[in-house]
Image 1 (cartoon, rainbow, N blue to C red):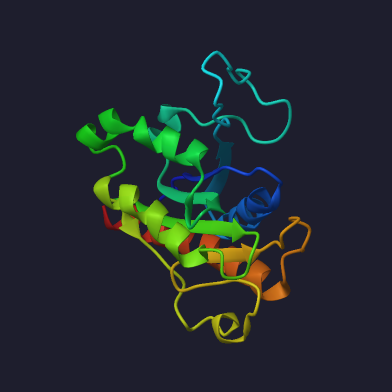
Image 2 (image 1 turned 45 degrees about the horizontal axis):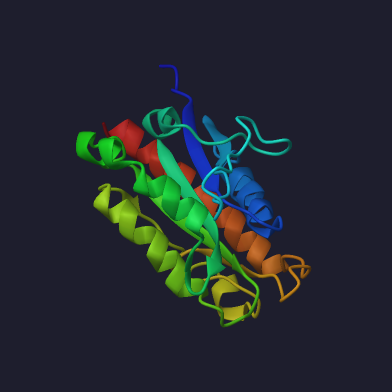
Length: 203
């Protein structure tokens, strides 16, 4: 029997590149699972100027997400930098536009995980993860975290949480991901892919 290739959506917003680096590590974890492919997508920034529009295609990096990406994915990793203990407005704006998919159950029953990067160590890592979980719960998704079988959760001093992968980038955004944070991000992606595969087999 041929194993079906699964697409796992890694959807993120990144202003200074740190959340993007985390997304790439999560994608690495996803693609370590046979038959699973990571699809990296981002969202355009929002502007206070009503007439301002983003280009149809970003000048560099991942393409902008489309609603079809939600329909086609077998699982979702959602990432955003922290904005006052909450997800960034750009990510919230995109999620606010998914009411039709909520009504049709596009994401219902699919596994999901969340990740974030913060400028200060106690700048709301866990509250940001929780804020991203709320709309995913309304979509009927199955939320995954990181179990304490990963020893890095007990040794990290820069990020990492049972609620999801995190990174402390420093106030100027230049601190690199620690080895603990890297391992936890990869582990989260791998766990998401393995769960997506198991759910696919079960159905």
